[in-house]
Image (cartoon, rainbow, N blue to C red; front, top):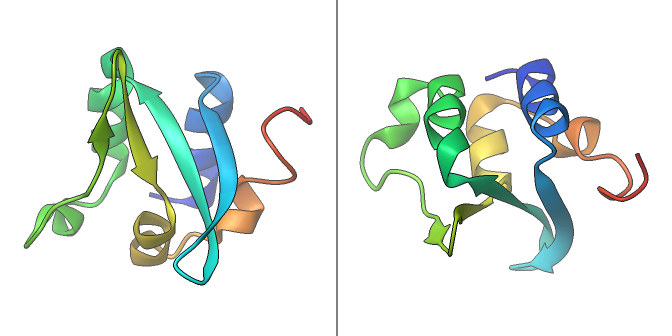
Length: 89
């Protein structure tokens, strides 16, 4: 997954996201609708699913993902994708 792929996925699908302080650093949580999970999964490199997989929380109609570990694994700079906050655009 590249920064551009992630940015387009977030933008094109109106994915809600928020920045938070978490575990002593900044992280971003995204909320991916259930019907978009397959598209999100296809963007991710296969190796990310090894060992423990990707941690997420299933809610009513969507999954919530913390993005720091995912972005770090993929070499994506979070601040290049998640600029300002999701209500600025």
